[in-house]
Length: 123
Image (cartoon, rainbow, N blue to C red; front, side, top):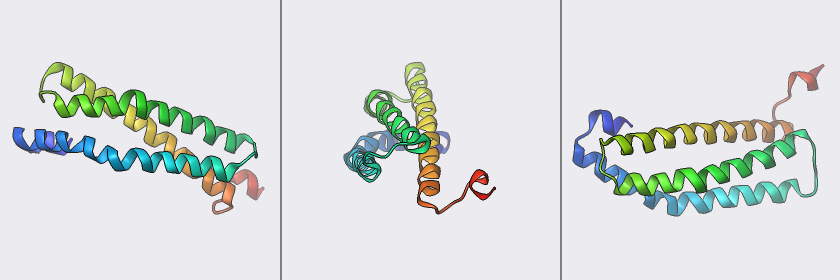
């Protein structure tokens, strides 16, 4: 986003074309994170664990159905067109939703591990 605001047209294109290469690392890392979470949870259930499972499925869906196709489209598209801007806005919104869901899962993971105690746990 900063590149688009302050960079040259060539720099914007270069950055957009580099992003799909990052997916080579990002997608397996997210898959391993999800798999390890499911493995650690095992057969346990509960509000927090069930919430983490549901959020992970939503995060994976957003990544596969919105973020990955958007990254490929934006890397091949011509910057500064209406469609490009619209796809980028959808991508930013989907990314924000995914990051929020990930933060919620991290919070729940910390609370499940006893690292952080909730107000209900203190009372």
